[in-house]
Image (cartoon, rainbow, N blue to C red; front, side, top):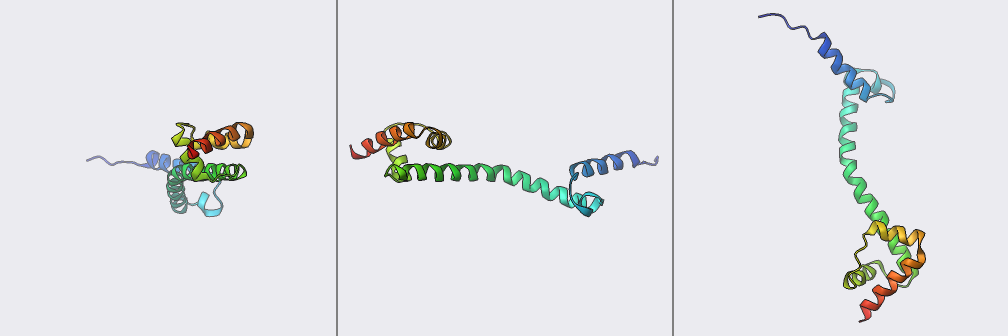
Length: 119
């Protein structure tokens, strides 16, 4: 059996780790073992936080809608209920955007939702 020389493969592996650890401070960007640990941890956080970001944005939109709804004398939950009954299908992202950039349009949606709740 012939001997296997790993220098090229090992160098590629190390280069890949150090490229991913670029910008890390101190030994986390310079030493192979700590860099590997740091990169693995960073990848795990990145994977998790791609999902967490979606949750955080949804809660931000809900907070904005609630604030705008309360300025129009209705709670968030009542607004959403009224919108469902009125068959208004605007997602929370767009509703939040409306509340910020077009308060009059948001007011009209609120009035429709209120009317549907009283009917």
